[in-house]
Each structure stands twice: as C-alpha cells, then as structure tokens.
Image (cartoon, rainbow, N blue to C red; front, side, top):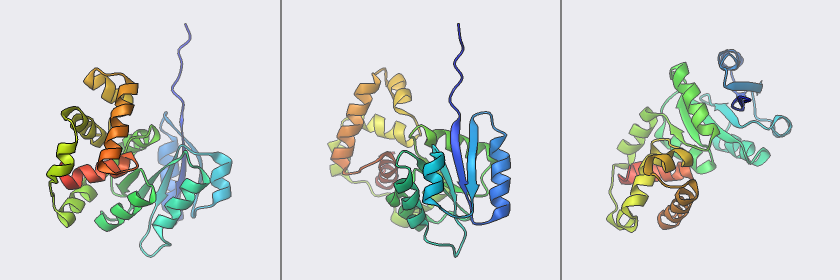
Length: 214
C-alpha cells in the first residue's frame, strides 16, 4: 500500500533586512515540512502570484512602511495565503491592527525556531497563532472585560468550540476532541461568527481573549 507523504507547506519570506531574510530562509528550508519558495526584502504582488505560497512570513522593522498595507497586498495578491507578521517587539497595538488587516499570526522575532515552525504549521491549515507575550500585553491594554450578553448568547458547546479555536485546534481536531463531525463544527463556527459579529478565526481569538471567553 502506498504511503502518502504530507504536502509541503509553501512558504515565502519577506523581511526588509537581508541578513534576517537569508537566515530565516536557511533555517526553515531545512525543515522537512516546509518548502521555501522564495524570499524578498519587500512585498511584490506579481512575485507572490507567481509562486502562490500557503504562508507568507512577513517581517517588520521599526520605521519600515506600513505593515497593514503590506498584509493587505499579500492577501489581495494571493487570497488563499495566510500571513504571519514577525515583529521585533510585542506591540499590542500593532497586533490588533495586523489582525484587523487580515493577518493570521503574530510572532516576536526572538521566538525559538521550534515555536516559529509550529506557528507556521498551524497557520498553514487555517488556525491562528498569536505570540503569548503580545496577547498578554493586549489583555493589559484593554483589560479582561467579560461581556455577559455576548457570553450568554453562546451555548456551552459553542463556548467549548471557541476555547479550542483559541487553543489553535483545527476544525478536524475540534471535531475529534468533542466527538462531532467536521461539518457540525463548521456549523457551530458559522453561528459563533454571527453571534459575536466577527468575520474570521483570528478576530474570534482576539475577541475571546479580550472578553474572557478563552
């Protein structure tokens, strides 16, 4: 019987600093699950459309061009791609902005290589990753304010689903954990989005952290 190998994650790296760009490319290309299909010091729509990456690792340096605009260009160029922003510092304001712009992940550049690789794997399958340090600062900035109306609008099962999403679980993994079909999980998530008035998993995670659901 043939053994099917998992499809490699097509990764494109963008960082304004050539040394970091080269180091990340070398590090990540060595991983058996990743295929670095290109790298650059700036966002180029045509290049992204040509290589169609699953994940864009988007580095941000202090004083560089607007990161939200760069996220938007990536998403417009390849709508199916998932963008992970890498920043030098855990800026909670930037985290909120890039999530609103469509990013699926937010990493700090001093993270361990193993953490970065796991984050890329999660983001590639549609999950969300937010560096805990940035998420913690976001909580301090906004305060963990429980909103009984919104929490009470969710069923106990929906709250379980939200917490698993916030934990980085995929739909398939949530279904296995709760002994439900993947289709049922998708239906739950659709209702959750409607009730909480969010449009994506990343916004849901941020909302869950800020409101105390997760």
